Image 1 (cartoon, one colour):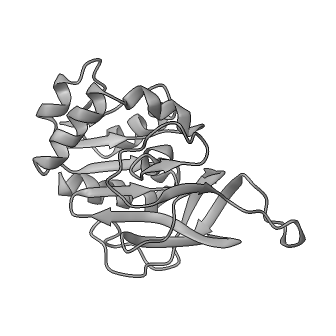
Image 2 (cartoon, helix red, strand yellow):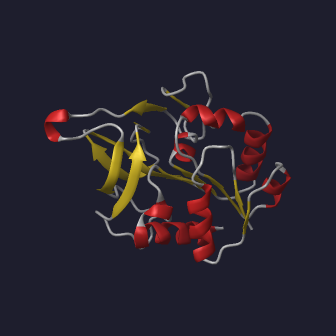
Length: 200
């Protein structure tokens, strides 16, 4: 059973539809008890990083305990940003802190037509092998909609450039994150979700 965390940051409907399409059993729990029984945990999200403040406390503790037991964790969009130490979008709100670094605002370039927020289909480069990106060709296109992004670190297994390079996919042990929306990224996105489910 996959535990899908609802902390009021939206896009649950599209993630639910994708999981249903893939035949996954999932639950959206009202309490942290279900996290302890999960085969995998997904933290989605859209909008402002400040929404992740609802995870501070019991939810963070339950998710950390699950990760410590080896339960796979996937963060999507703001959920991926939450894996880092924090974000300049809401400096007072702590991140989960399992990935080093802080999330920063993207830069735009009006001369090149690169606006913020970054919305649309962009390619991902694969600097190293990744279990989450198994079967995904370098240069595959996925769908982004965001104004903030995580830095490229040694945990980055997929990068995209919007003026500057940023981490589009991160992976460390059983912890994974994608800045884009796999549930809205066609066949490539479904393959990424399928890969995560197989790891669970």
